Image 1 (cartoon, rainbow, N blue to C red):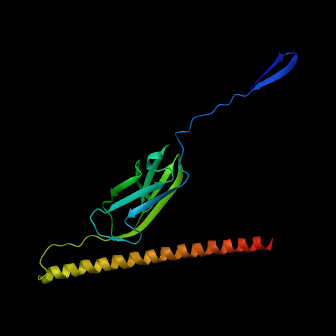
Image 2 (image 1 turned 120 degrees about the vertical axis):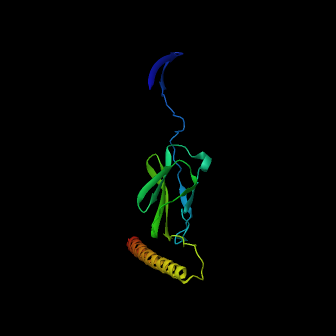
Image 3 (image 1 turned 30 degrees about the horizontal axis):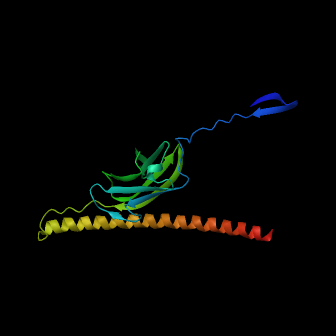
Length: 189
């Protein structure tokens, strides 16, 4: 700020000059709202491809073309980071999965802050071996064992999913009860 006095027609005036620095819009702006979606595998899917594909998309209030800043999509499988991507939609393949329940999660981070995230629980079962003649009793027995193993994997996976959902429901019920208590307190005051 600068201050200057000057005389105009016998009257003293003070001129204050305020210097304002306006920076251009930052190149690191993050979207105010965004939604991460896992399009495949859907929550609860049973997947039996050799290398299942994860398909994802980010919906942003800025639109995909309007995203600025340092952003990334971090992909996790069963809690472990497997890759970081710089695209906001697409797909990737998962190879070498073991039979059973898996969780794939994707978080959209902008300038180090998680803006949106999604997760999907799915069951992976190895593809059945399609070799041989169904009339050969030895191969039929082997296929029966494969089916029996798949049924066991599915049963265990769905039991785990049911338990996880039950825990989520209990947590939500607890949150609802807390909110109801807050609402009752507010009404009394």
